[in-house]
Length: 222
Length: 201
Image 1 (tube, rainbow over the protein chains, first blue to last red):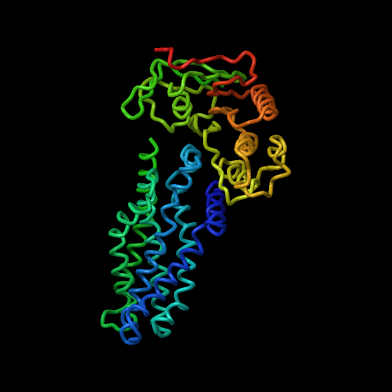
Image 2 (image 1 turned 135 degrees about the horizontal axis):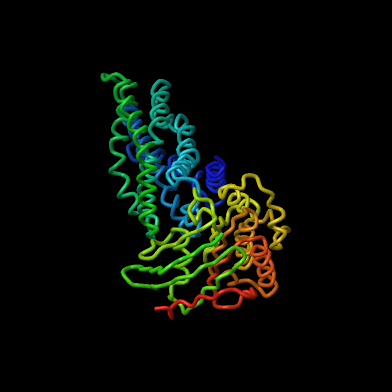
């Protein structure tokens, strides 16, 4: 469908240009993770134990960063009007915008994670498990965030409301993401159990997120 | 093709904006919507494309594609220009022509028609208000749609560009299109119907 391809290409282009959110997300991720060892001190055993949790929290905050502009920018310049009256189903347009957001903010985090994991003294198996959980879990963060971004679309300073709305909803993803990463390193729970639940959370949010966000957008634009 | 409305009413934020609005526009005809500020000119246009709920009355399109809504067969030129400052002029236009369904349409011709062909590679952030408006108008030319809904199309345009817009609108009407335009000024369209909002109650 060419309308959806057009949206995907445009959103990714905007994200990597000046003022886009792609690079800022990775830099923010890097800064948060780098600050943690300074705050905790050079206790390698402690860092190793809480490393996956720190990386996950940083990834969660970083993926929220660019999210508030996802629909608000289109609303402010009138693009959203044209998108709403277009022939492409709004749910699919929203899903494609989510995909573009994940490709430009989620995916760079996953690529940077092994490098940053070194700062927290994570060894190779732990890093592999962590990257796998981030790869599976970050789409859930984006697609849950879509709902908040759609609800906050008409508000100025909507980013604050977005964080308050979205962060509680991401708690299950955080729990099972960190649990899976820890299970791979320390046990005693097998890796598969929390990882499967994480996969299920992502699949559910990919289905529910676009529909809920599209419904919210239609309601807001009335 | 005929777009007709009977007894339309609009309520926004609990306030009745207008009521009892009826008109009928056929292929090759234009309707100029005028009225004081806040009379509901923009709301009426947004109602046509489904962006504002119809509180009362009905809107019908005869001779169009029955599978599509009015909005899906119309171009809407609103107050905002729907352009991304970080994308170039050509990228902005190529996106809308792709999104609105023209695929990889030739964008050189529409850009030339509005006099922006020399600026195709310039980021839209550097365009003046009038140039942005002309880029929006190029969207109407890049993708063929029978109904044009124009909200203050001449605002920010200089005299030469206004003349150019009149030519483009006459060409659209000549090829069987129809135009509904909200404006305070004149659009250079002879024989256009006029609808005055705020006096029809």
